[in-house]
Length: 111
Image (cartoon, rainbow, N blue to C red; front, side, top):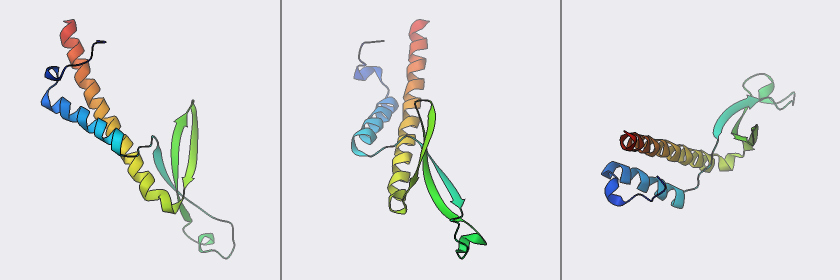
């Protein structure tokens, strides 16, 4: 399995999956993590949040070295961060598909 794959070994659909992964990795920002929307109260007695819905915030949450870390995403960066997380998730989905194809290829060679 250490030998590089040759193009004829790959189906057209697998070549397309691999090509899309490379395209995303080389031309898009990507960020591992998940997004969490939260609302909270600021503590000011005259603020609208004191008697109703709290202030909404977006947090980027990620596990790192066995611990959860999180950071509040400023409003100006929310769209780019959402896009970067979406790109990472798409890349992960594509990698999982390619891995499944490789799994099947391994089983076919083993038998």
